Length: 493
Image 1: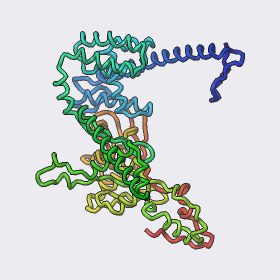
Image 2: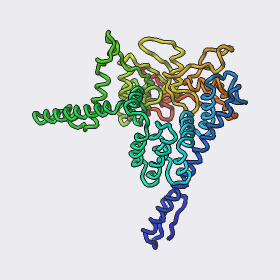
Image 3: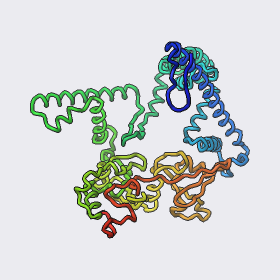
Image 4: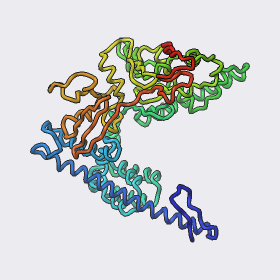
């Protein structure tokens, strides 16, 4: 058997004279060997991360700050800060998020300390890291060494034969068998940790998720399903009773998934919390609050922009009828989540509870931040500029940041844009209580220096804006003069 291959990017081609089944058998054997080798490397990575966590413990001397590591401001939280500092060192060097690295360090320590049989199987390539995580997650609530040993003895052999998804069911079942505490007591504690979260998705979308008791979560989904089915049936009946209209055809085009999503949005945005409201009904009056970063030209209707640009250039509107609004850079929610221009115009023009962050149409600089009720100008400007934490790799949004003086105010640092930066609480503490250092090098660029001496620059997030290279073709860029020789008038803001 012979396979011709290379690193040119094309798939390897089997020799035409070979039996395809023999080639396939060889490929499967090769992939098995590769998966085993990858698992062994992942085990080595887990071991290294666990050693990094142990190193942080060693460097965090109980009698005082570790040499060249912790600052003199160490306190009872120094052990946690040492873990943060080590995670930050690894994350910046590997271009990762330091919270993720610290979590992985904790996972690695737990895997080696509490699940030795699982780690051994991973190191020998008998299971993958995905299998190990399933075993680790399902057995996280087991504390007694004998219970853990019995749990691993039942689950690891299954992991060597089955896919992670199938192992999960057995792992959950075996972990439940090994639990010394009744399910009712554990469920009561778990209910106390219910929460709602949101995560950004591409194309102007986001995922809203809630961790709820199982009965409540499945009940919500079932109710939404019944409501969606009822709505679809009613729409179909109306369509059969009379002539179709544009509105009816749109209603009929939505499937069950879309109807469930639309009904959930309407219930959450328009419904009143009757069972949890205050006596004076204050909760029902609360509306959403989101920062909307908008290039100033986005606030103008596309046809208006084209007409103004053509008039300034000495051209008629029909001459540029092919100009498309697709060249427009979208607006953003909270400085990081793109939204379409039409939604941005609605929010910026009608909803007074939204902060409007206007950016220059050419270079993207923040021009103004306005709101119905004015606040502190400097804080609004910095919140717009630093729309996320300014530590490399951190994405915590602006509303949860501390405005920190780069040069301490108590030591004479000025309270101005050139000496302030938005930091999340985690990295604010990292700056003050470990050997991580920070300085501003100009133009809002921060330079971080790690305990080992590595330097990492962090540039401010670029707001949504036009740029000279990607601007709307009907609007001249800065410095350009139309053929008439006369400078164009400014856009009609």
